[in-house]
Length: 135
Image (cartoon, rainbow, N blue to C red):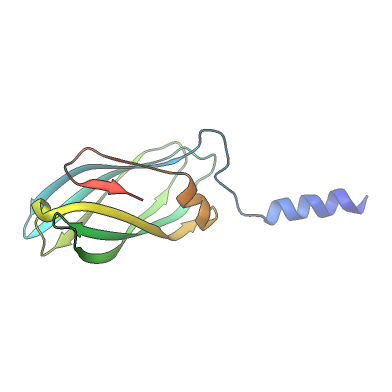
């Protein structure tokens, strides 16, 4: 009788993973516009995992159209509830959107509610702008 109890305790303490069929974290770079000396990036983020994420942040590399690393930054998406899309904006000061060629999602720096690997393994990227979004 001890084994089922131990199994239940282990399962209850194990972080959730992104191995649910078809579940994903979608990042859609929706717009990029120049605003007051900064490039404002607008993302639609959608969590189709079966659980809420109380914190989600990605280390992101900004790469110019010439292929040079312009900066390394953190995009903090905050809490991302399951099944409810959210819009987040980030201003990259001192750079024009026209000089950004690509954004590289380098890794998850926060992933509360799942394992850090789950926030990368479940990641689906899309860009509706001329800037490429890769990971």
